Length: 352
Ligand code: FE
Image (cartoon, rainbow, N blue to C red; front, side, top):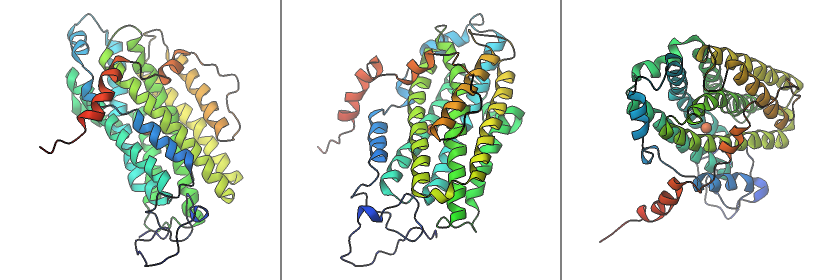
């Protein structure tokens, strides 16, 4: 059992005070009391995440299926691009979910922060569901997609980098209550929220959403838009969490770790650039691999800035201003007008 939390519940009249709460505890603490809330920002992320609830099977794939069956509707390069990015996501959200539940959750001891981690873990399950539903609807070879992260070198390189950070935290001799444990957690969070959800996901989002910009695969694109909205919240929560941990534990944020994680962004951009080149060898859908690589450099600098680190690519520009509209997707969409109320009533139990 981790030494930063206790499941021995003593009889006592000593109540938990806000000041007793820590995001990462150094001694055993009570992890069961949400109230009093100390980290209001984390609770707000949880509420905002719940307000965005959606499920994949509520989005019709009918038009996508008709389009996909039409031999004239997609050329070979487009089919390859779609397959690669779906292949990436079939296992990417699962890697994130496993990392949250098996590695991160054990370290974070504030219940209100855990509340968002639980919500996020569920959203990763919804995304994994969407990336199962889309290829199944279109009749893809599922074995091929699910094994891409072991068979395609550019995809394997990304997955391996992330998985090694999870493996680091799973080491049974690592104690979450120690400086070493907390520092490894901080590295893990930057690798997952900053590089995986912050860089790798965005290259694939741009490539998938480009189909929608040519009026194709509307059901897939609608789901990817909801996923992008969820993911932009995961990203912002993650960077806020990392910064809050740095503020609470300044001793973790050494020049060595700053240098190391900055190097990951550099390396992450290289991995994503190689991946994009393989996905998109020829220009397509109004985008080229050079444009996607430029976008990745642009967002890498934004992530670094938010973490208080020096930018790497000062001159990078955003070639896809339309991506910010996608992220700011509002609930006015028909889907939500019809569905949100149904969640409220459809979820109520009938005892008759
Ligand atoms: Fe996520």
